[in-house]
Amino acid sequence: MNSKNRWQQVVRGGLAVLSLALLASCGGGKREAFHPGHMYVFGDEYSYIDVNQTPSSNNTYARYSVNYVTSISPITVYSAIYPWTWTQYLSSHYGKGTSPCANTDADQTSLCSAPGDTVDDTITKINTKNFQKDELVVIMAGTRDVLNAYQTFKSSGTLDEAGMKNAGIKLAQKINAIVTTGARVAVVTLPDIGLSPYAVAEDTSHGHRDPAQSVDCSTGDGRPAATDEYAKAMSYLTSCFNYGLRGANGITNDGHKIALINAFDWSILIAKNTSVTYPYAAQCASVTHTTAATYDPTTCNYDNVTTPSSPTTTADISGATYLWSFGPWLSIAGHQLLANLAMTRVDYNWDS
Image (tube, rainbow, N blue to C red; front, top):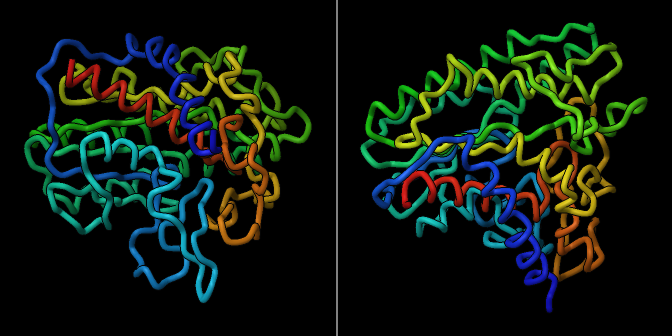
């Protein structure tokens, strides 16, 4: 069995039980089958693909995960189709290709995500679009807001719980406005960044957060007790953002117009249930850690030409043993696991 088939087989089976366990908490019920018109994707590095350059430019199709190099001379060219991001899987689920943000063809998905985009940046982009009935808007935003709040905590000890809740509420209000147009929204809560390789590298005193310990901004569970508990702070700030997004002042989640994909609980379940062998380690261990979590998307490559950077072994390339690629960004398996969760959710809400 080749490495591609191996990791696909592993991750397809690995999330089945976890997906079902999360369905009850996110709304849904009996619905007519949904066939979206045009699709849009908004957010940050989690859903970014460099599709906005010409094919003759470096970095085309680069992602914040593992990139497959198809050519290195005279320029570096990355594969457009493998390995996919979670949004590419979701687009394919509805029979659509992926295109730059300005494309409005019905058989395409407009990729409007960009590295470093905050909630405000995402809302600004959303405001430029005129959504139509039965279009699908996919949103996974807020990571940069959490990382910025974490940097404040690291430098001053101030934990901006209210700011994170408000950022989640602001995004939720925009989502509630989108569905009044007749469009539908698939929105993803942020995974637990306190379990990522970025958290491990930042929190040299404590390492990653223990996934067995509860973290809940609505109750104060898991709030860092000391100013050097960096991983706990990341988890707690992420929880606060997610609480704002889906709490009492958050999205109107009746399961009909909005599909809520719970990546926060998903990432914790993976760590607790060892669905991957290395739930906290980086698939690309050679990528240099940056304290501001700013990375080049082309730093994690493998190829069929040479091996200019890690991962280089068959086990590394398969990616089935890692949840994260580097920093706070998902691995090959992580993207397919999240895609499986997303597809299960939208089917449960809209096609069952």
